[in-house]
Image (spheres, protein in one colour):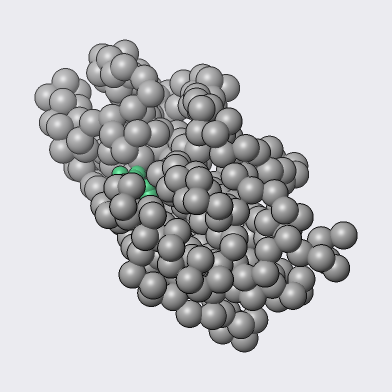
Length: 329
Ligand code: F6P
């Protein structure tokens, strides 16, 4: 039983890559689950950079008290260029050994998991937790931060819609998602957008944006919301095309990094806690090179190599639902 005989004695926890609301809840769960199993926990600051520089300190259950409601990450986050070199990984592994760290929980996206895999080659047990507002990690249906980011975006767009209605305008809103359109599509569904542009789909402006607005105009509709993922197009360019082609008074808004902050929603807090709880159990049971995944019902560990090979599609169901429901009528 892992409870009586954990296979790791001292574990580190780090957050790496772009931050995501809910990361603090995951850190808290890692620290407290480790404590319950008699495993010491070290908080590593600034992701892999902190592993290379030895920027870390022990975390007690009391140190992580009251953080579930806080956005961002108490451990800070960074993208370390040095850790991408063999010398950097070697140094990080040496520091782990020197500090007696035999397991590491790495909270972040695909890049974070690739880093964990490199480190595992030096004998450190690793377990990844998926966290990114983009929800673009293939092995899991959910990543920490997505729900909060969606809620932040729809709050902004609901406000924009008020003023767009008053002035009978079209609003083109750029949301985050450099390589993935989950956020744009979900937000578009939630606000009843007239069009959603995502990096996964080639853009046909006439078919995807202009036609729904023209149809709406025929039915007497006077305000529209077009949602654009940042990796698909620039809001200003889309707004220009809409204005030229439809004659509508059009405004572009970029929501930007606001989406990465804020109080995590209940979904992000509870799922993040579950990811953290499971990650420590996995290390305590002697498993390594795992990512904790969520299939919509349960958490399960998957091999990191397998997880990194997977490709996530946008979800045709949601895309065709958006096309059917979009407000052009
Ligand atoms: O968190 C993911 C993400 O929001 C991407 O959609 C975006 O392109 C990227 O982070 C930007 O991150 P940063 O500004 O921190 O480089």
